[in-house]
Image (tube, rainbow, N blue to C red; front, side):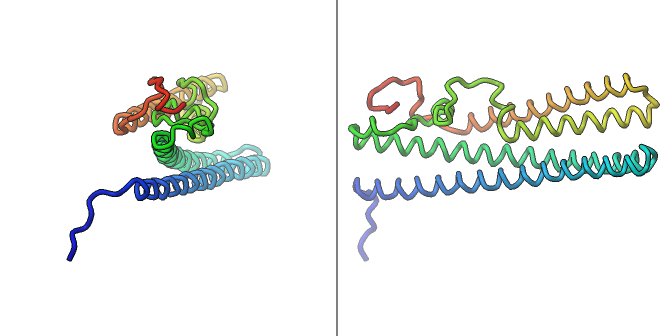
Length: 225
């Protein structure tokens, strides 16, 4: 029995990287599909629940039936929103890793064929800045966390939590309308802070676990864009 070769030639390496490139692209397609599906499910649930609340409020003249229905429905929506938010961040992180992996492979293409660099419109750098450049984002900032899909879900979660907080203040604390509004605003701020803190902490953890080989700051012709 012959000993298996431990080194691949350039042609075999290129085939392996092309296969990995395709796998990473398939991963990105899967994460985008799941993200769209879960977001649609969540927003559909919120929309139908608002319609249901309006209907119950109309037929009950905003009485006890409406209050009981809202106290049951809103926590359910908040729970659905929280798990959707967490999963959206997970799929977003998976998509980010796959995108940066593709950039790294594209960097190898430029290494073995430097003349092809001018034909690549996407980045060849495997850091966060390189990935954001592929999205048309020239500067990374904290606001980027809010315009993502999970950021959108987080804001809607906070709005639902604020409504629930204001309702609880009105029902159980016998609060007036101004008191309920103040409580709602406070709950919104706290909820949004917790969502933002989760994103920030998880982002720092994911960045610490990813090794950047070809950062954007290195301005070397052989490094690509």
